[in-house]
Length: 168
Image (cartoon, rainbow, N blue to C red; front, side, top):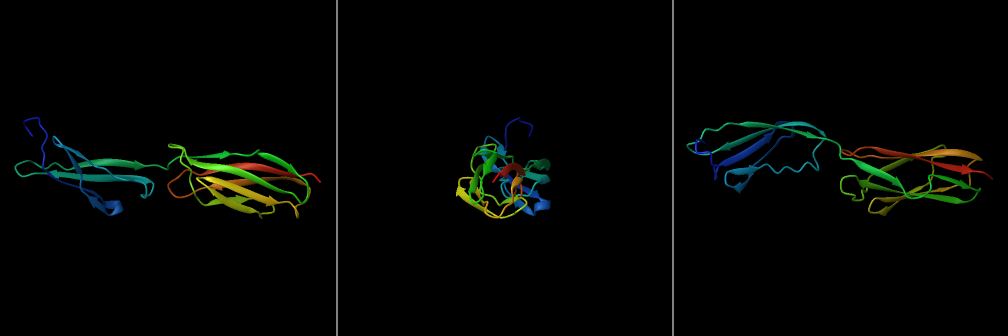
């Protein structure tokens, strides 16, 4: 464009070959076009986006835009003491909160935990708050680390280790 003004009314398109995705750009006026692309359900990775803007009597010059989708950060916060001592027969509960680190919204993901005795109940309370309840009836006297791991596609993995001690 030799007039240094925007070109309205163009036909626009974009293609992301690796995702087999195509679409068009939004015309915001004054020759400005916006590629509004949701990455929420797209896999983590690097992508080349080929953009075409064309209009009669104007030269089309394809443009390549590179996009890097990274894992979204999570935060895992223990809401109860990290170490608990119990007597035989008592149940103990640990509560923790898993949130989106960027906006603080609670996340409801698949949560795994592991420890020597491997049993207990993991309950989603809601809004990213979980409760792990462990009965101590059948565990020997001693101190046991329990590792809780939260993970899902496109989000960072978070782990915490809590300690259960049975003293009588």
